Amino acid sequence: MSDLREEAMALMSDLREEAMALMSDLREEAMALMSDLREEAMALMSDLREEAAM
Image (cartoon, rainbow, N blue to C red):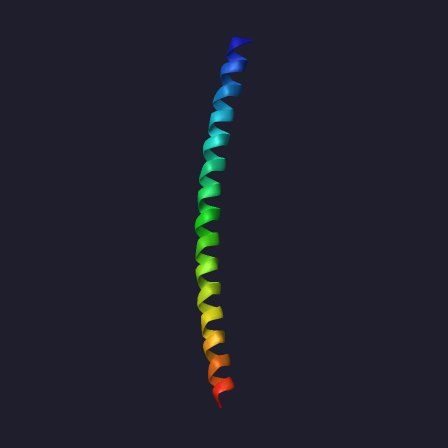
């Protein structure tokens, strides 16, 4: 029983590490997407201002 408990604890630890790595990757992707969207929004706002000034 002790061996099973140790194996389960090791698996849980591995899963926790994988989950943390995935969360980190997702956070980085989300930040990059937000940055891209912000740039697109700024460009659109600039275009709209130019059109409104005409």
